[in-house]
Amino acid sequence: MNILHRTRSSRIVSLSFLLILACALSAFPQQKPSALKFDVLTAEYDHYYRYDDPLVKQRIDRFVAEAKRQPGKTKYLVRYRARVRQGGVYSGNSNDWATTAKHAVAAIGKTYDESDIVVVDGGVRENETLEFWFVPKGVDLPTPTPEFDRSTAIDCPQILAYQAGYNFDKEKPVVLTAGTRPDDQAKNFEWIINEGKVISDIGTVVEIDVSRVKENKLTAFLEVKGLPPVCKSTATVVAEFGNTARLFDSFGRLPNGDIRSRLDAFAQDISKHPGFHGYFYNYGDRVDGDRQMAARRRLFASHYQARNFDKSRVTIVDAGYREEIHTDVWLVPPGVKPPDATPTVDSSFIIRPSARKRPRK
Image (cartoon, rainbow, N blue to C red; front, side, top):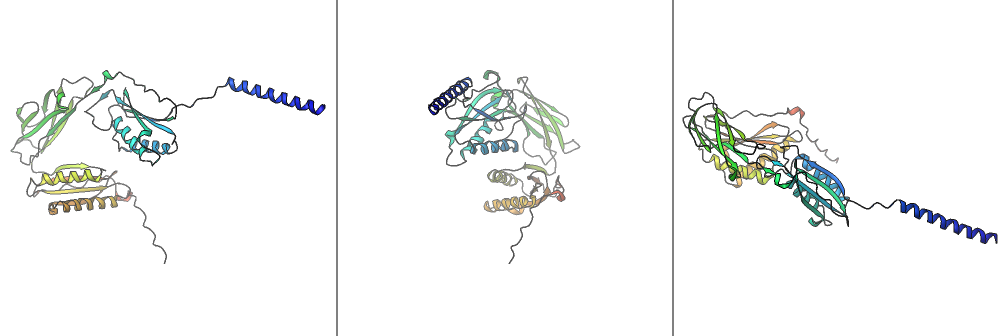
């Protein structure tokens, strides 16, 4: 009897404990899974980051690394455009970032495809913004949170102001051209010229007599009338003239295809100037700059050889070191001394890869 009594008592205690535990659990409802915000990338006012900008690349790489650890969740990207986009922005905005991030995640492997990555236009905020989310299966996607109505967004035009062509003869007038992109936003143009004599001015084109200008350059200021108050409305042009070297192009790290296009553009231009010579000044960066300069030297030489371009018309120079890899392309008239190289980092600060140790025999 005692044993039976203890057994029944134990069962009663166990059932009581389970009942108490059930009541306690019911008092604390289980937390449902929810969308997880991983990161937010925001550009400062009036600043735009290209898709290959180091900051954008770093944030996308971090998102991709986390995506590998979150295979069961939807990768959700919410992009917001800036309320005011200056200069007819065609790249460097949140749409570019989102597209790059989507392709990067989709390239992880066979377990991913673009259906796993959802990109949503979230509307308008003060600055270009991209939100990175991970959303568990069966959970609603987060609702975008714009700051402004779409009707308040303003696209300011890009102001174009430049010298038309080269002028290696001071007796010929300098021609400056103005415009906007898109063209339908073209307004009234007003030029302010600090030197020289204006021959004609029709707004979009101004001709200036520079024969009596002491230096070989002048500065012109352009104001575009009639734009919204929040838009930039001015531009500056430094016009060069006379028998001096001209900087034709300047570029940093680019895909080889883009570089080849620039080489073709220079070859086409120099063909219009018999007797002129081209100088390509290559600058390596702080890390392994020698290898970078050698790689560009080979690329330039092989490209012009494939184009049957007269390579005697160009000189490729290892010009030293800068913070980042860079190339300056100069067009130099006959008899004119080429410009000096302008490195910004002394060679003693360059990091060179250590020589590989030869295996012992």
